[in-house]
Length: 206
Image 1 (tube, one colour):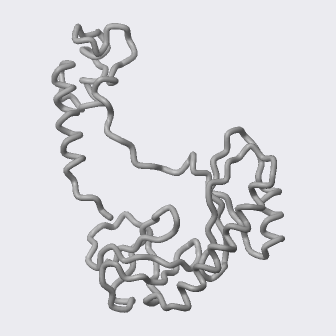
Image 2: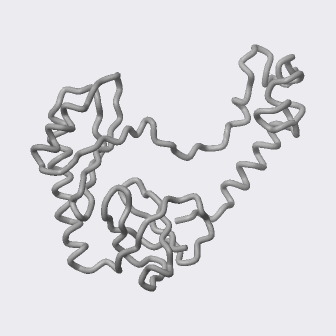
Image 3: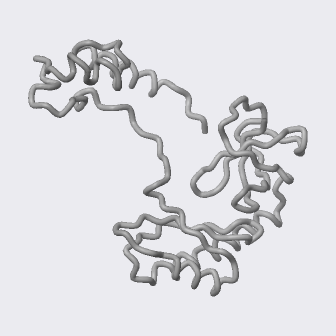
């Protein structure tokens, strides 16, 4: 499968190589997604993963495609500026418009409960395309490995080396944190130190 990164959030898509033009890593391509048509970058032309969303690789990007993407970036900034003018308790981070202008996506961080449907309807009418909101607070993000110095069950003597009843009889070391392989605070620290070193040693995907 061909692995492609697209969108401002760096979304990943998988394209069938048998139904796509020949590509190489780093090629700029045009893909069809559930979010519309987008420019993307080929990350791998022989990817074995099956967890990314399926996309359709339409063509190698042309100068006209790149020019359209630049115009859409300016268009997205207009939509973002209009959204910023509202008094909703939302911080609007960014916006993007699909290459075919089938829709726009506002990246947002709400800081209080609110209803943005009226704003989205107004923006959709004003700019003549569907405008949707993506709540970044609900978007899954990669997390750093836990800090071993902060791995406690919350009781006063936990994590101090003296042990506590929760951790020794059914807390961290018995299941959820280390799946039974770590029995003491010292072993727990060694376990997560080794894990952190392994994570840092990995080669980044992109």
